[in-house]
Each structure stands twice: as C-alpha cells, then as structure tokens.
Length: 84
Image (cartoon, rainbow, N blue to C red; front, side, top):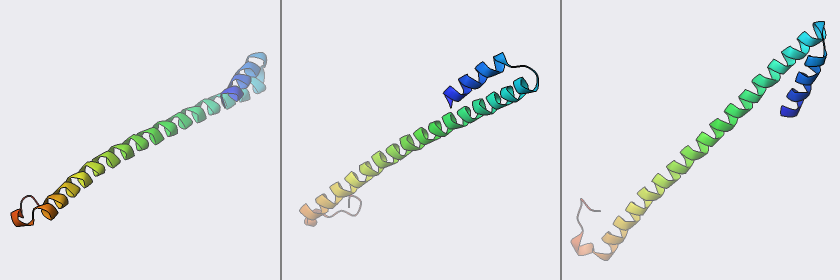
C-alpha cells in the first residue's frame, strides 16, 4: 500500500484538473487505509501483551495452588484450613 501511495502521489503531481483531484482523493483514501492497518497492528500487539500478562498471572495462581496441594499431601496431620 505504501508503494501504491507513492505512485499515486507522483501521478497526482504530474496531473491536472479532474485527474489530479481523483488521484488526490485516492491518495487520501490510501493514507486512511494505512492508518487503519497500523491501528489494527497496534490493537493486535496490545491483545498479545494482554494475553501474555494473563498467562503469567494464571501461572502464578496455579503455582500457588500446586504448592498448597503439596503441603496438604505431605503434611496431612498439620492440615490447616487457612493454608490449604
């Protein structure tokens, strides 16, 4: 799309009248599309970061649960409701 935009801008500089106006409108449309693509990439990157954070937090919770289960299995006589 960047290459198309460059070509359209070059043609617009060389053109006049209605053709120039149409090429300028096309250039504006391509610029808007490029912005939308960039925003889409930014949104996907934010989703990946959010998912990564969620996975890390879940791993921590699962590790705590595993530690509690081990404690309860190894120390049944010391079973404490608050810890297990």
